[in-house]
Every structure is written in structure tokens, then in C-alpha cells.
Image 1 (cartoon, rainbow, N blue to C red):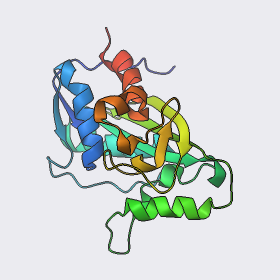
Image 2: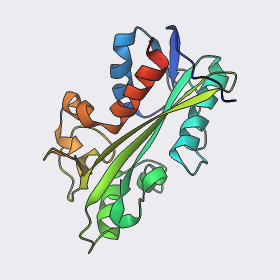
Image 3: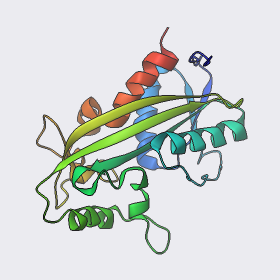
Image 4: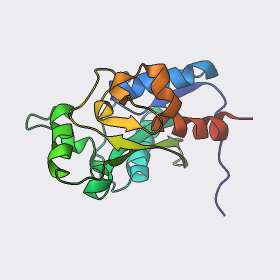
Length: 205
């Protein structure tokens, strides 16, 4: 029999990410809940190798590594953009598409690759997917899912956000995430939708 979902009871939570953009979004979402937040980077934790083939597997790898190292609950996000014309790629390999020869990340090049590989296809459907994994030091993990459907555009538009945000227009809007202030992005953002599940499941009464 599966263990019932656990609740967080205040205290300290590790955000198992070294991505500054994700950390900004998650800190803003957690602030109203009175939870003390510290990031894996601030604690000097190494980034674990993401060997999973699904968003759930990679989110769990990151959350469990941080929870085990700190003896604290840890929250990790694994997310990516899925392009219909590319059969759902880059998907779980979204960040990998941006890795350069020197190990840094170039998202402008990654977005150019999307346009190049989808060239000739009239299908502009795209979706951002986020999976949050909440892990405890004893190995318990629970997941929360969010998705934002829309379309991709090229060339990219806007300088706000991070990653592939300038490429993606969510349904019901004409702006890319790169053209939106954070408060507007949060209304349809995949990560905010996953966080709403987390809020109800792990922080709710």
C-alpha cells in the first residue's frame, strides 16, 4: 500500500537547484508560506548527474541528493519544452541542448536548433512541462505536475525570463514568456501550476 502524501510543517526546505531563474520563481512562490528556503548552491552541494529519461526521474535524483546530504526536506524541479514538430523534443533533454563545448549553456543556440530542426513544418504547437519532486531524507518522494500549452516562435522575443522563455507563447496570449513580467508569466507558467499542486498537497491543511 502506497504511503499517504506527507505535509511540510514549516521549518527549512532545500531548493535542489543551481539554476538562478528557477530559484527566483520558486522562492517567490514559497515566500508567503513562512518556510525558510536555502538553495543547494548556497549550501555548496554538487549538482548530481541527471541520468533519468523522464522529468520525474531527474527531479527525484536532484531532490533525493539534496535531502540525503542535508537531512532536510528538499524540493527539485525538472522541466523542459516539448515541440510537437520534433516529436516532443527536446523534452527531458531541454537543458542539454544548450550545453556548449566548454560546458556553459547557450540558450540562443538551443532555440536556433529548435527552429533549424523544425524547419519546413507548419506545426507550431509547443508545451512547457514541469515536475516538482519533494523528497525527505528517508527516501520518500512525492511529485507535482504542471503544463503550459502554446506555440513556439522564431526568432526569440523578449529579454525577461530565462532559458527558452523568449521562444514560447502560452495559449491565450500574444507575448512570449520572454516579453512578460514575472507576475504575468506566473499566471500560466508550468512551474507555477506544478507549485499549485504542491501547495495544495504538501502545504494545505
